[in-house]
Image (tube, rainbow, N blue to C red; front, side, top):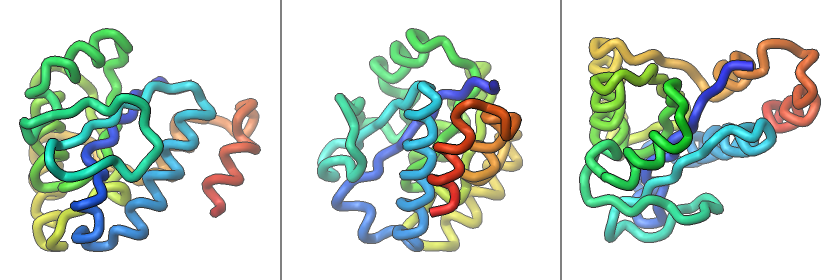
Length: 169
């Protein structure tokens, strides 16, 4: 089974209502979170200060002031502790926190993926340009469903039936 760590960036009350396509982005992210929990893979949540609580049920999110999660000492310590080099990013906003985190992670030797259907910006155009920049930086793009099946590798995985229910929702 492919091993990933999921980083859920700043899905917060005050921001989500302003994000283009928020309903779909939130639904896809929820599927990923649930699949990662079933698979027992690490999930790191971050919370930008002054933007309210995270909309997902998260234990002890990492509070940050920097746009890049990698600018936060506790985030770096958490990454080192889980010892996973393949990182999947989801979050808001694509052109700010997600982009800056992705660039910092790849610069520091991580294999970085972004589930594009789990990221968003207030303006659709900002997300489109951010995705182009992300590709230029050599960061891999995927969707929530594609990553879930990549992790599972086979319909014979013991978690397949349980996760299939989530994917079909």
